[in-house]
Structure formats: C-alpha cells, structure tokens
Amino acid sequence: MTNKEYREAEGISRSELFKISKSPLHFRYAMDNPAEPTPSLIFGQAAHKFILEPDSFKEEFAVLPQIDRRTKAGKEAYAEFVMTNADKEIISMDDMEKIVDMSRQIDANPTAKALLTGKTEQSFFWTDEDTGEKCKCRTDCITEYEGQKYIVDYKTTDSCEDGHFERSCRKYGYQFQAGMYTEGVFQNTFEDYGFAFVAQEKTAPYAVRVYFCDQDYVMQGYDQFREYIGIYHDCKTTGNWYGYEGAMDLPTDLIGEGDF
Image (cartoon, rainbow, N blue to C red; front, top):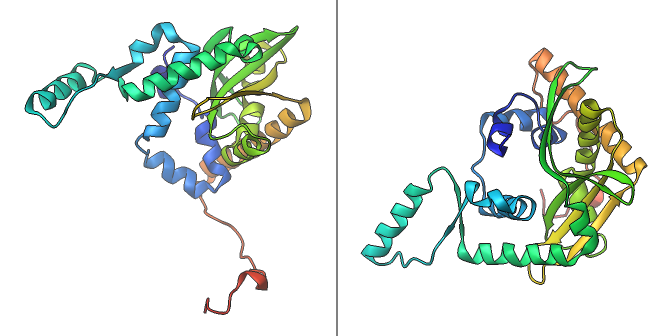
C-alpha cells in the first residue's frame, strides 16, 4: 500500500486524532479545512522516504535540477518539469543533498541503522473495541533488535541535545503515538512490541540519537489514546464539537499594570 492509498483509506490516524487534544473544535476545523503541506513537511517526508525506502524514492519525489527561471528558456524548462512530475512532490537539489548526507549519518550509527532495517512502511487497520471507531497507523519500521521486537519511528528534529527532543515529544504527541501504534500492531498481530524513536537533526552535521521507550512511557501514551478516541467517539455521537471548556482565573502575577 502506498502512502497515498493509506491516507485515503478509512480510519482515524494518529496525526488526525492528536488534533483533538487541543479541542474537538480545532480537530473539526482541521478536518474540514486541510492545510497545504509546508516545505518543512515535504522535506521531512522526502527524508523519510529516502532513508526508509530509497529504491522507490523516485516514484513519489522529483528533484528539481538547476534551472535559471529568470530566463524565458528557464521558465519553459521549469514549467515542463512541473508538468512532467505533476503526480510527485518536488524538492530542490539543495534539499536532496542534505537528505543524502542525513542518510549517511544514519548508516554511520550502528544502532540507528539496525533499528531502521526491517519491514518498512507497514499499514495497520483495526476497530477499537470500546468505541467501535475505525483506526489506522503506518509504521516506519518493524524490526528485531537484541532479541526484542520493536516498532521504530524516524523523526527529524531541530536538536537531539538533552531535553530538546523530549520537549518535541510532548508538543507533537509522540508519546501518544507510541501508545496508539503499539495498540494497532497488537490488534493485528496479537504480539507485544517495544517502541523506539530514531531522531535526527535537520541541520549539519545531522546528528542522530536513539530513544528507547520503557513500558510505563508507552502505557501513558496508550492512556492518551483511550482519552482521545473516547472524546472523538462522543463528539461524533452527539454532533457537539466543542471548543475550550470551563472558565479560568488568571493569576494576578500574569496581569501587568498596563494591560487594562
């Protein structure tokens, strides 16, 4: 199954469901008004594809050659290139060179390389028993490392310094992802898997760091999945996609003299 086919298949995905953590209203708006992919998102998708599935990279991405679009000939060449690759995402030559360098750093890290060697881009579908909601997930890699089966997710990040990626985990719902993915794979295989992240910085020298998630971390993510899928089901049932609930009192130390 291609990534496009997976996205179009029935079921709520991790990236969609996490939006409900802000509020059901924000979730509903995002579903009704899908955003165009940003250059940063396309870069991350291209890095994923090249590192995990290099043999089929050219089926989904095209690298823009050096074209001087200030000239008439350059404009014509660019228009032809875009038309020829209308079914692909286009990335620049500079970005492609960065992605190749990133891939080399993955290869130079024995643990990261081992964790990202296995069955890549597997799609899983299941029906949640408690709510009856159809769910799906697409794992970057499923592999075995030192006798343990792992679901492995590759992330690009601004920094792998102590504390930085951990903050990204909280901000972008990576713990929730670990909980939802292990649940999805279990519902399909009836086997327990560990979970690990391979994180890589997006700027040179493209440092790599591996994070193994302990069982408590994954179970907390599973609890988040249960919360979010429950809210999603209730909102679908009632038709009430509410926003922020409850009034709040602002602490006085947050109110400056010039605010009013």
